[in-house]
Amino acid sequence: MRDFLRWLLDMGARVSRTLDWPLLLALAALMAMGLAVLYSAGGASSGPALIKAQGARFAVGLLAMWALSRVSVIRLRAWSPSVYALSLLPLIAVLLVGTGKHGRHWLDLGVFYLQPSELLKITLPMMVAWYLHKRPLPPRVDTVLVAALLVAVPTGLILLQPDFGTAMLIAASGVFALLLAGLPWWWVGVAIGGVAAVAPVAWIWLLRPYQKDRILTFMEPERDPLGTGWNIIQSKIAIGSGGLTGKGWGEGSQAHLNFIPEQTTDFIFAVLSEEFGWIGVAAVLALYLFVVGRCLWIAVEARDTYSRLLAGALGLAFFVYVLVNGGMVSGLLPVVGVPMPLLSYGGTSAVSLLAGLGLVMAVRTHRPVHGIR
Image (cartoon, rainbow, N blue to C red):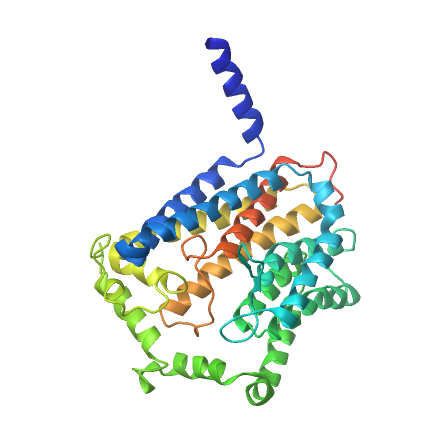
């Protein structure tokens, strides 16, 4: 019996040696909180089915995280161009045969729906880091232009779906790799100026009516309180009514009386705020900040440029997902349909997020003895 236990412990150590336990424990706490809030948001009728489905997705994501954490950085770097190119194919396919409420965002694969844009949250930082790792840093003008093209191709395909929010988040993950490579900030100023210059053209020719309504509602939600402004008004009421300690798990009136829209997906953070109050929100935000900080620490400790850029870009992208969803449900940013990581109900998002953090764990575990730079 003693030999069997020793063998079992040895096997467990071998299997889990590539996992970063501080990061994994923080993620486990977030997933547990997500399942608890999801059960409450779904109610007694649909809550059990929701957490069963979401739990299965978490299991798939954790398996992907473990598998990717065992891949060496050298191999990941070699795979980067191929996986980037392959991830563009579903983006093209979804424009032809995809489905969605406002355009074409999903591919119906029979067993499940795939959101191809989620794949780029992993493959785009990999590709930009691969392109930059052998080039002089800070990047020169020609390097920046090529990297910008690598970012622009998937961003443009996602805008055609159209999915403005996801497109901007995907673009941000690639831009973060450039910034971490030492991109001068005046480039950022030029980019912001360019966006401001084309904004009137985009408003007239590119944005669809529902996208314009989201921006107008963000500026003045009370202009249509029973229509386009309903979502954000009810969300802010839920957040404010939670107070310091919240109303208690399963006791949120805004959620259980169906005032909060999309309460299991985009606006689940409002349910958390109402039922757990500021204390619950602060605890969840602290876990998010720990995840981001751990990713950045791993990036700082990395011994080669590819690893530093990849881990840093994935960590900062995670931060932006939290920032955008939190700003969206609290009325500080327009509603763009971005889920809250590991809290919102959704399969592709959860799996891609956990898989990306598996890459961060691979960076920590498989450090090359001699860095490239």
